Image 1 (cartoon, rainbow, N blue to C red):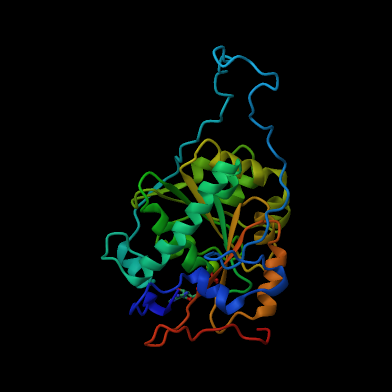
Image 2 (cartoon, rainbow, N blue to C red):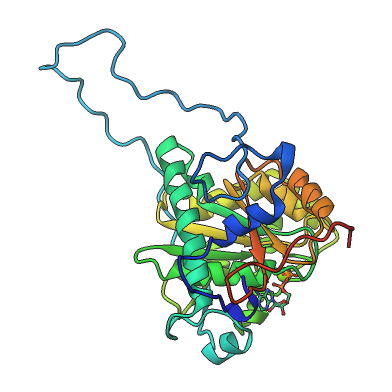
Length: 327
Ligand SMILES: Nc1ncnc2c1ncn2[C@@H]1O[C@H](COP(=O)(O)OP(=O)(O)O)[C@@H](O)[C@H]1O
Ligand SMILES: [Mg+2]
C-alpha cells in the first residue's frame, strides 16, 4: 500500500502491489519461475494434496442412450449462518484509521485493494475448479514482524472483498497475542476464535459479529490463554474452520495473524488456508526475515508477497525496497 493510499497514476496502470513486491523481493531459489504475465509475487508449487476420487463415467462403456441415473447430491454440508451479535461500524473511525470507507468516493487505496482482491478471488475460483475450493477461500494475512501492516491490509482487503456482490467475507482476528481488528473497526469484542477452539460446546458461528457493512462479518480473537498454541495446533481448529466455511462457496475468510517470526499461530494456520498474503513493509522488512517467514508458512502452497507502504516518485517509480540487515 502506498502511504495514505496515494498512488501516482500517470500513464499506464501501475503494477499491482503483488507485482511490485515481486520486483523488490524476488526470492531466488524458493521462487517458482513466473510465466509472464504472472502477477503473483511468489508462487510455489502446491504441496501434493490427496486427490479426490476422479469423477469419471463408468469404466465399462455404456450406450450413450442409457445413462446411469444421476445419484442425488452426496450429502453436501449446508453452510451455517453467522448469528452472533450485530455491531454497526463507525465510518468516521475507519476514516481516522486510514481504512477504506465503503460509501466514500473511490480512492487510490481502494483501487489498489481491488486489484489485490481480483487476484485472490481468481485463485479462489481456480481452487474451486481443482477441488480445493474451501481451502483456497481461506486467506492468511501475515508478515515477519509487528507493525508491517498485517491488520491494516487484512481489514482493507476484507472491506474491499465485501463490496463484491453476493460475497460473504469473514474477517478472523487470529492475532490472539495482540488482537486489534475489533478495535480498529470500533466494535466491541468479547468471545471469539480461541473460545470456539477451546470449548467444543460453543458454536463458532454464534460468535461471529454481523456488521452494517454488507457482506462483512468479524470473528474476534477471543480470550487468550497460555495454551493458545496448543489449542491452535489441535484438530479442533480444523473443525471450527470447516464449520465456518463448509457448504459456502461464496464465503471468503481472511485471517489477521501475529508476526510469523514472533509467534506460532501464523504457521499453525498456514496448514488450514489455501492462500497466504505475506505483507512486506517497504524499507523495513529484511530479506532474511522474509525468507524465514516464508519458511514458517510453507504449509500453505500459495504465498503471495504484498508490498506495503512504498513511496512513489512523480514518474511512478517505487522508492521503497527491502533492507538487507535484519531488523
Ligand atoms: N500503507 C499504509 N499507509 C498508512 N498507514 C499504514 C499503512 N500500513 C500500515 N499502516 C499503519 O501502520 C501501523 C501498523 O500497522 P498494523 O496493520 O497495525 O501492523 P501489524 O498488524 O503488522 O502489526 C498502523 O497504525 C497502521 O494504520
Ligand atoms: Mg496486527
